[in-house]
Image 1 (cartoon, rainbow, N blue to C red):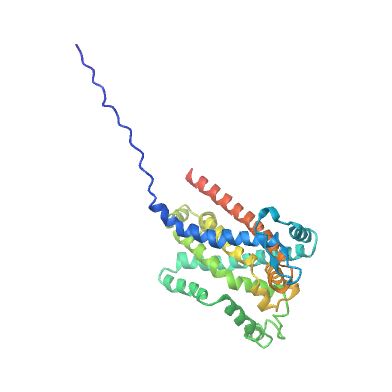
Image 2 (spheres, rainbow, N blue to C red):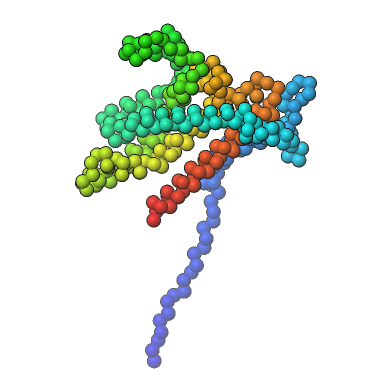
Length: 311
């Protein structure tokens, strides 16, 4: 007679109760987003789709969505697709694209040098990169107005180097002044996230490329540059988002010249300088929708790259 041994019955593990303690840490961030983003956006929508007081010419928000009036939004869209606001939008996109190119040309070499080459003086260089954040953006733009005047230091240096014979009025409303002002103002935002990505690249991958016979340039373009693409995209997004809403640069460097007016200047003008707050609020919503499309593209590309890296 043989006895059969059976395995002891397995006891199903009880699901661990979800702890609400750690979820409470998200409450301050959620409350912040609700108070300063969701509510704020809804307030802008209430103004854009509301009415204007006929006597005081001030905005009368429509808090009830059932009472929203889309007349102002339709008028703004008509002016964008075939009117004067379309020119301003195209000019803004052109300024931001040119400024982003300038940030890449200036910021990438700086970030690469600090992350990969400046081992001894890296801390000092990082402090110097952070220093611009200690000074107000407005103060830096006001300082540039003094440098770019006819008798300013920029003209003195260019004449000393024999790059121009006569002093130039850089504050006469030229597009180059606005573009270089944007580059100067936002290049620190570009360098720091790119630096963090370049600093995390495994040095053994670069050494492997050199061991396989690749030159320094080939190793950079085939190893370093592809691995830095996520950081490059993140730095670009962080840089261009505030650029699209910028209105200080044109105001201070070109005295608000209509030739260099950006969409941020139009929003400021309609919200503060005219009796058409609905138009300004509608422009805010259109700009937000445009930036949302750019952010969605960035997220899609980032998720796709992460999935490819996991394979």
